[in-house]
Amino acid sequence: MSMILIVEDENSIGEIVELNLKLANHNAIRVATAEEAIELINNGRNFDIAILDIMLPGMDGIQLCGEIRKKDSQMGIIMLSAKSQERDKIYALSTGADDYVTKPFGVQELIARVESLMRRVKRDAQPEQEGEILQSGPFTLDLKSRILYKNKQMIDLTSVEFNIMELFFRNAETAMVREKILEGVWGENYFGDVKIVDVNIRRLRIKIEEDPSNPQHIVTVWGYGYRWTV
Ligand code: CA
Image (cartoon, rainbow, N blue to C red; front, side, top):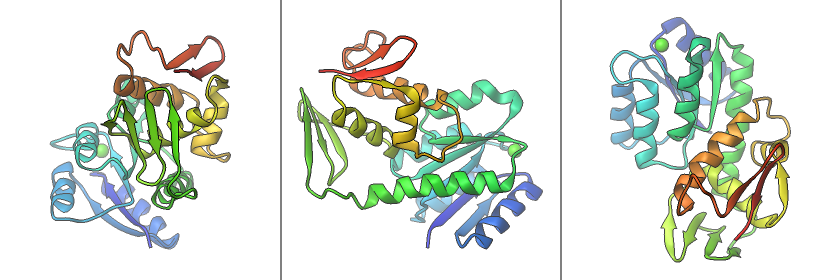
């Protein structure tokens, strides 16, 4: 059974999310502050997915996301943001969140997002092609350990970033429309918007490009999407 962490200071929202996750057969632990969440993780609690509200007393959800990512690149992270926090949302994704849901949200939509992210996280834990290694120029993608190397240097990626790289490696030198990347990585039933692709690409460029503002590998195809080239 999966374990989900909920960090939400608004009791009524936290409660309904927790209840519905449990009704959908997930384990869930709910805390009201980022500090409590960090304590749980430091005490060795493992979570498949974390749902983080952005506005929290004390440390906010975005900082918490960054703290979690320092220790754990595999955990799925969904941010909860208010409509007025559009900029925060994009910033949160750049610190390593996988998805976001805007308040007010339908709890069933949130559960659907959790389960879609869960499938990605679990798929990552059991790669289908064990031992397979993909090579592209100076880059090596080890599908078994799910590690990317550039000139034998390890590059730390989140699950989503890894899946994007795998998609690129399998479609090298091919212009890929953003919707196709969204479908290939987030799944066909994902109903978020394609901006999430751009945010992840921006983050990947910072990790893999010599000069992220002048990318040589993840090239923008204007008005279309991206192309992987080495
Ligand atoms: Ca809040």
